[in-house]
Amino acid sequence: MFSRFEWTMALRYLRARRQEGFISVIALFSFLGIGLGVATLIIVMSVMNGFRAELLDRILGMNGHYEIKAPQNQPLTDYQP
Image 1 (cartoon, one colour):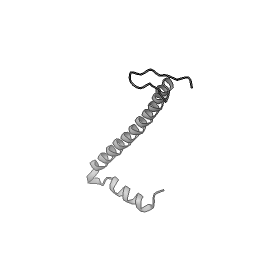
Image 2 (image 1 turned 90 degrees about the vertical axis):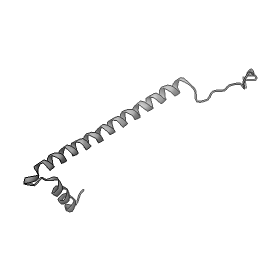
Image 3 (image 1 turned 45 degrees about the horizontal axis):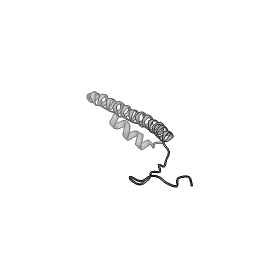
Image 4 (image 1 turned 135 degrees about the vertical axis):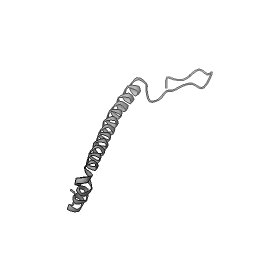
């Protein structure tokens, strides 16, 4: 999936050297934060999509798609045909 060059570049900047051990801790926390954020976004979007579909089904199930009304202050005549 990834070429050897891409893996080499990623590991070069993610591995800590001896005197820069704190950098890898920061990188680890950054990756965990990004992963957690993406996972949360996917879960929330899935739940909201399901909620939207359920809400539309319930709203449209109670009312029809069309509503026929008479003009203002006039009775509705000849409604049988």
